[in-house]
Image (cartoon, rainbow, N blue to C red):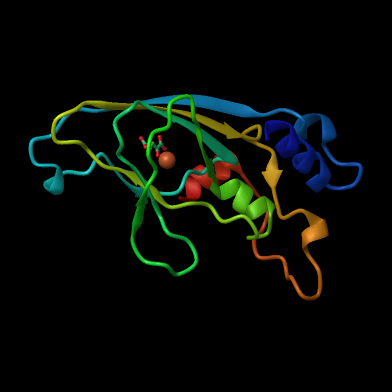
Length: 160
Ligand SMILES: O=C(O)CCC(=O)C(=O)O
Ligand SMILES: [Fe+2]
């Protein structure tokens, strides 16, 4: 997955452009702890959001709580059950932009549990913070106009 992203980043760099710069990446690990909550219906672990990353890889402990909003006009939240040894991959906003909207970034949230603590570990993967991401040119054409302008991860954080 990560090599595919590096490939796409190089592919989307302008001809003769900053290949060397685009070959890198930046990443962070986020540790989330959601203490048990006696009244879970009145508390939110993590409010609905999309990740600003290219992709996020999430490990969750064996307490469920991760939910994703059904894509494509469906209703409601879908719980992502913890699977032993399994990881959840979230498409982030920058991959959404890179793919010119073909890969949709996923709206997700975390719920709290009445009796049990929950932890999750998110690996946030993105491009080098100053490399500008724009839709891969092969995905732009007369029937698929460019949907997003070029933006760097640091600029994106300032804007949103
Ligand atoms: O804990 C979860 O299930 C979600 C964590 C998350 O969305 C994040 O760290 O960005
Ligand atoms: Fe997230």
